[in-house]
Image (cartoon, rainbow over the protein chains, first blue to last red):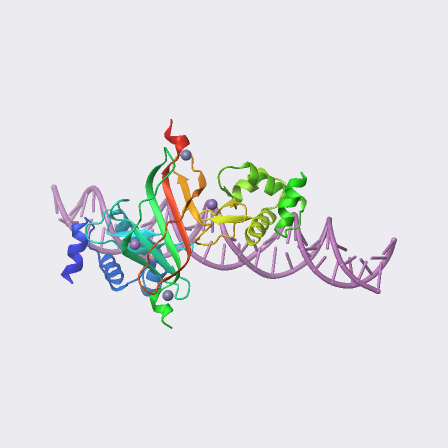
Length: 138
Length: 138
DNA sequence: TAGTGTATGCAATGGAAGTGCATTAATTTG
DNA sequence: CAAATTAATGCACTTCCATTGCATACACTA
Ligand SMILES: [Mn+2]
Ligand SMILES: [Mn+2]
Ligand SMILES: [Zn+2]
Ligand SMILES: [Zn+2]
């Protein structure tokens, strides 16, 4: 897939075999994934390499880290032209207690949060836990 | 302090020496504290005991756990008559990157969050990171 | 082709949460 | 009061995940 290479190159990430595969994997997932998820899929690869691949993706703004409160860091690809800016890019994350999946609700941007005087907001994490649409219909 | 005993008893927690001390410690703190904080203060006590003391406090709705994204769980006393209900009790937490303190902004309740159809919200975590009022004035 | 920088793999570390079990303290009951 | 029961504490150990150091393999350039 030349497509994948383009994506990496656009973000100044050298398209190694591993990176292409991990990117592919991320593209195919509709929900956020953990390092362990990647590790279990690419059994032949070393955990550290996968860890650093994800780290590289985050640093090059190709993906973002998600702290969903489970204690396990999740990752998801960023939207087009995302720079993880507090006012424009940050969005709500939802963690389902039943299927255990965490998803980006990219349409639900973080609402404007009023803070007490002299507080400066630089980053916001908004996570809702509950039951997702899929699990709710069962 | 008979006061302390009353607080514990009201929440059906037996007032042991350790619990009274930890409660006192929590009352004196304006910002949230970690297990390690408690451990460092009560050097003679065992970590597990302190851990379970905090756990007991949380289970009896005397305190609440705070996940501020630092990877270390914080604890803070609940407000009067708090049951950690999503609509009435949950509030914003602020983590300062400079002084590293996490505080409850109990006046800032979690705003109403609109979710996609069929999603059910059971819990919300809203953490803002940045610079607190104290650090900002320097 | 030699050389340099980057990517990968393996091993080890570190921090924090949590559990099992023995011991001690407190409470209940006969 | 003494025995029996229940609850709290202390110590050791485990598990899980993130992260780093260092050696080797690979890729690209001069
Ligand atoms: Mn996201
Ligand atoms: Mn709070
Ligand atoms: Zn679900
Ligand atoms: Zn501060």
